[in-house]
Image (cartoon, rainbow, N blue to C red; front, side, top):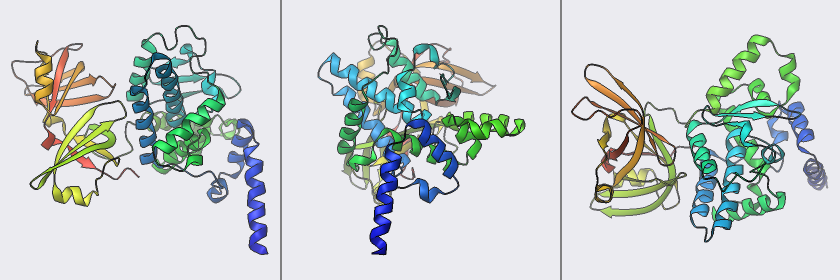
Length: 371
């Protein structure tokens, strides 16, 4: 009888929470944040790996659209997910965003309304959003380009959960937001910074100004962090395994990133077994800068792209040199940045040049510990 009462109490609490609006729910989180066990009632948390899987599925869903109307609708769902996942915005806040609220060049969102605040996004995400908005037909005729029927958003996320083999009820706007907060908390972001992110004003109003300033700085640094992995490698690409091909004791692993890049890695069968790699698994590919080769554009681009396993076209963003070496950063088609460190030779690109980026499959290191 005692266990039955516990179940009834939990059901009542869950029903109560489901009826709260976003402001009431945020207030409840603020009051109970010291007790994580209570806050996790029936809401679950998506891991970084699962969030990446959802992001990749939504991007592929856009690519597979059969007509322009469907593609634009799927683009909108992808963009809404991006703001849920990286900015922890409430759906109502996303629906009222205009392009004037977005400073994507600096990775800034200006949220207006009752919980007005500034939120930061990773620059690679911003570049992909800029590319989408630049398409024109997505937003030029809309005051609120991301306004969406809540039922359609819910249905789209449920369909995504099925496509990713995740629990259907787990993939929703609230869980995605809470997962981002949990991710940042686990990285070490203090509670005050999380309150600033979600727009909870109580603790921020009463905070010491030095603490408030430090928390805002930490919030920017953590939110614009390109990857949660701690590594000296500057070139990191996260994606899902698309195919595997073994030849002798070597295994060729092909992964597709959330931005649509296909990256091939050549690893030993022992590494393949140790990482327990299989199709659909989320991996991170890292490449040290000296193994990234930047070459000038050629007329016969198709031949060069087809003759190399990892060949990409990009635009030079920065060039730094000393007496021996050049550090070159290149923006790729998906908005991600790759860094090359090479000896100064006959070819030294300038900012704005279009170039080839070549990476040998043997130079790609795979990691499976995304948490």
